[in-house]
Image (cartoon, rainbow, N blue to C red; front, side, top):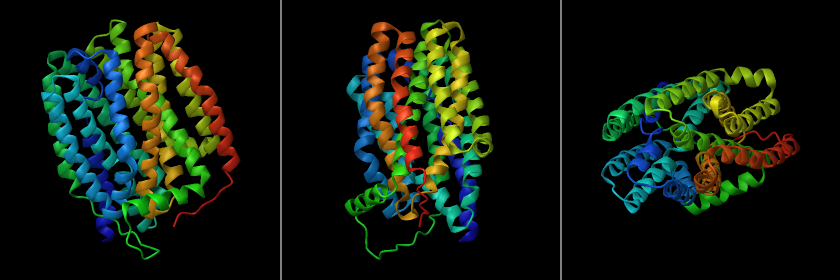
Length: 396
């Protein structure tokens, strides 16, 4: 069992690489536009994705905690393959909406489960102190995969969109095959009860009520992730509007992924140097200033996008380690799913609003407006984290 648990880290590296080698990530907005969807419809489709995530997130997290993280990860990859196939054959808004719903369900089943599987494996081996470094390596590989996917996807999209989606489906199939090699880490049931979905979710919420610092870390992480996702997805159309080719856009996004990868690799060193509070301030400041830069200095917008990639790379392993270190294994996947749930809540609101604003007043003003709106929320969360930062809850 020890060797199998150690192997989970290696399997996780391979699995994460294939999962993030999603060559449609940087072209789906352009693809939907090519298929006749307006910016408002694209925003609505993204909202449908996040409404579905909102409904499924906690139940799928509970499924992972009750029936196993491995089961959840495998199920997620099956649905991901189905979603890719639906994107290829869809022709109208309703059909695309169905694809987005299936895609959201696949995301829900994986989110929290794969992360919890790695952390619990290390915890069982008494090596959880290495998690931030290992998750930094994982984030590095995922960012490299994303960069390769963006570059390849952009080149294939310039030839024909269908080639990108066909290859994307095959790659998700490869991720599915790799996922069968995970070993489920044993988690002790401390109360001796057989859990149901409702009981699992209820107890997880009770745990969260006693650990407010985790709640604010989750909200903070979701808030910053929504900023990064918005600039990533709408950046495709923004750069196209200022006359970048699809290949040039792919090169910019690939470079961003490489920068994010290197930042993830160095995240644990940066956090050790600056300490947690200053690291969060740094991540927040880079995100907001990048948005403002893309708003004001259009001729330097590609540079500001690349700068924002630094924040994304640092944030991923740092937030993951902070949150995992403060929650019990028995409720890990459920509580980690709450992170994705909060992210979906924010994206449901911000994504269609951003699309509507961009269509009416242009991308530059919209980027600047969103950046300004986010500032007071970030300040509030920093205050709350400082207020509850004294909580030292050792997870069971």
